[in-house]
Structure formats: C-alpha cells, structure tokens
Amino acid sequence: MSYYIHSIPGRLRIKSLKVKQNPRASEEIRMALSSLQGLGTVEINNITGSILVNYNPGVLNSKDITSLLERKGYFDSSKAVTNDTYIKEKVTALGNFASRTVFGSVVEKSLEGSALAYLAVLI
Image (cartoon, rainbow, N blue to C red):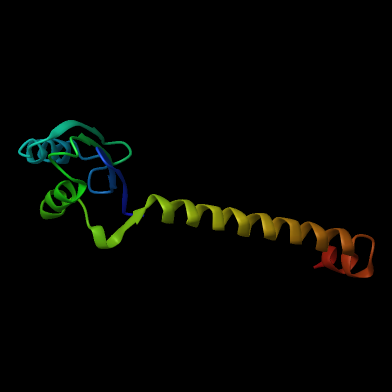
C-alpha cells in the first residue's frame, strides 16, 4: 500500500510512502496546507508516513486538501486504498490463513498413524 485515505467531515488522514522518513516533505506539506482557508491542525508522522488534517468542513473539504497534496506529488488518489478496502483485505487474508491452518490440522489428524504418515516422515 503506497497511499491510504480515511475521511470524515472535518478530519482527513492520508498515508503516503513519500512522507515516510522525509522531514523535508513534512515542512513542504505544512507550508502548502497553510495557504488553505478553514485549516485547523496538521499532524505529520514521518515514521508512519501519516498526515492528519483537522479542518472546518463549512469552509474547506477533503477534496481541496487531497487535490493540493496531489499537485505537490505527495498523494495519488487513483492508487489510494480506503479504510473499507484496507479492512476487507486484512480480514480476507486472516480468513485464508485460518482456513489453511484448520485444513492442515484436519489432514494431519486424519493421516496420524497411517502408512501415508510414515511415508511422509521418510520424505
């Protein structure tokens, strides 16, 4: 995942690999966002690449913020994963892992003590 976005009115979180370990990017983003009317607080974490923006939704909207970040090269909405997509991917991966684990245990138990089990040990 190179870009992530989660937005509710008044609060926007974006994660970008271009911000990770890049303090210069943080300063450039702060300067660019400061030009927007209705901006509240901006928190940037260079360890995670997270940009958290609080804003007045009566004056500003998330599209204005993401558009500015796209123009500066710190965000690409066409490659962004939303919160719902992120959770769905993780739950699917966990389900697949659990299925493989249960299936493996069932097969192992069913072969226990059989000639196939002894053959598997030799291989």
